[in-house]
Structures are given as C-alpha cells and as structure tokens.
Image (cartoon, rainbow, N blue to C red; front, top):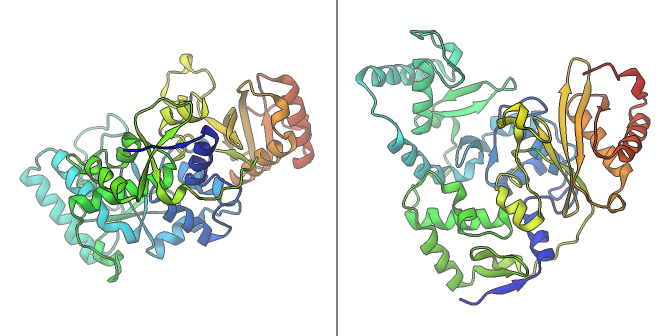
Length: 412
C-alpha cells in the first residue's frame, strides 16, 4: 500500500476544514448554515453542562456566527434531525436514520434482561403515547419505590422510556428547557426516509466516509470511534477495499509517528485558504473529543477538568480551548452569570505562544461576542498567567462593553 505524503501544515489544514474551522463562516450564515454544518458533521454531541451555553449550541455558534439557539429546535420540528447515540447522545440528520439501526441492535444486546413487569410497563407507555401523542418523563406517575441515590438513579417509567428509545420503538426530541419528548417513530419520520437496515458492509463504508470527512486525516481508531458500540463491524476490511478503489488514500504526515493514517481522495487536491480566525471552542466540540489527535497534530495537551477533583485542576472547571488559525493559544475557564448578565473568566491561561502571533483586538471581540451569545452584556476577566495581555484585553473589553471594569469587579 503506497502512502501519499503530506506536510504537517497540510494535515492541519485538512483537519480544520473537516471540523468546520477552516474559516470564520465555512458553512455561511442563517439557519440553513446551521443545518449544513450538522449535515456535514453527521453527529452533533449533546451535553447537559450549563455553566456556559450547552455544547450543542456552542458547537454550531463556533461555525455559524449569527446562530440562534431556536434554530436547532426548529430543525427538530421540521423533522430534519433526530436524537440518538453514536459514541454519545447527539443530533443526527434524519436522512441517515437507517444507520442508527446497528447501534440500536448493539445497545439492546448490552442491556440486562427485561422482567415481565418491566415489559408490561413498556407496553403501557407505548399504548399511552399512541393514544395521547408525545409525552415527557414527568407526564408519568412518580413510580419511584425508594429515594433517588443520584443522577442516573432513574425511576421505572424513565428506565422504560429510555429502553424504548434505545431499541428504536420511541424517538426523542428536545424542548428549549432541555427536557426530552418521546414519540412514536411513525409520527416523526416522513415516508420518503429510507428505513432499510444497512448491511454490515454498508454500515462500515458509511462510518469510514463520514468519519474521514469530519476528521480530515485519521487512523482506524478515529474512523471507528463513532461505531464504538457496534461489535464485529467490518471497518478494517472495507477500509482496505476503499483504498484499493482509490476512494480513500493511505497517508503519511511528515514528522508524525502514528498508526496508518487515511484521508478521502477528494481532499488531496482540495484548495483551502489558511486563515487567522479566532475560535472559542466547547470542551465537547468534535474537534476536541479525540484528545490524542490534538496532541499529535497540534501539540495541545487538553483535558476538560470538570471531571477532575477540584484540588487537582490546573486550568479550571470548564476551560475552553481558544484556537487562532492552526494554533491553540489559550484555555479560558468561563462561567455565565445569567442573572447579572456577566461572563466571568476565572482564568485565561496562555499556552506560551508568542504574543505577536495573534491580534488582541480580535481576541477581545471574540470574547465579547461569546459573552453576548451567552446572554451576557459584560465580561469580567479576573485572572491570567500573562498580566500584560490581561490588561490589554480588559481595556479592549471595556471599550466594547462600554462598562468600566471597576463597576463589575465585585461580581464573582
């Protein structure tokens, strides 16, 4: 197998383009641009953390500058996207519904045996939804026998709803308050959607082409990441076939040591204009979920520390990667105080890059835009490992918000 050799800079270009970060508005503007991004991605991860705007909205805003959170709910109402699992829960284009079948089958084989009592409850739920229409978990009686012991200690009706969802007997959407709504698939899926279960080979090819479109450059582990719940998939054998067919290219990146890398053949001659745009990314952005890729291709060692005990955190609870061009320049630990309408930056840690490599005014403007996106009118930058840049940014932010920092210094 002959490798195509590309430079690290070219690999970075392809990776950024695949993630939708090749330019400030790679997919355009408006609701259609939001759908184009989701359709390109094939899967938009949902996350519940609300310290700042939730990850699914944040991810779209990073690519579609004029994004409004209502658009995602409108796309659901228009039946253009649905919610299900790949490596996590997220939104998927409705046209790809058939490729959720292998995941559903895999999830069902992993679950515990269902008791007759649980089967009866599931049938009751299906009957009620068929008669009454879409319902939420709170529409069912509180059938908890004992007090909840934690976040994932669901009551029986909630467990039954999720089992029906995982098995494909129910389909879900999200309300603006983040509550799940459960409905029958036949009430949601239009008649023109292909519901033919894919063969093992079709599913593998779908995963390979989908993944490489988003990763830009990736190895087998990257390609198979979204199929992690599907055991016995044929990704390796189909990947070899696609290479032989010339649809996928085996790649060698200069200066990078890794397992065999691949990219789409159509990406080989793709013209990409490098930019110096600023992106403030969600920890759960598709660009960040494969941490080893960030280290390998961008020399950025990243971990979201909300899962780390407080005493062991180095950068903060929810430090957001800040990307300029092809360089991660900082991590911004932020929290939106929605009551006071202040975006509090508890820590802005710069990565040791030369301060001349990025525009402070452009960074300040992006931080201000991020504050507005989070429903905040002012920004409070409290700490940074570079005091000089902190002063410069505070001056720029004061000018943008027309709110001298001394007026908001007591907010924490």
